[in-house]
Length: 68
Image (cartoon, rainbow, N blue to C red; front, top):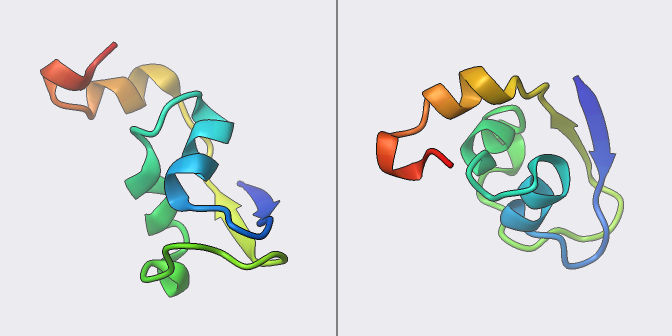
């Protein structure tokens, strides 16, 4: 598992995009950081856990209409 230190103004979808190239994995990142699940806009300096992504397995978990 990687860690990411937030920048002022980061939001979940932006963090997901930085690590995966899309916003489809937001829930997986949020699940790895339940203590911040109700945070919408992050201040600078929050350390988040970023889970590893296996693109094939992660894509299979998506509904068919969201698979790219």
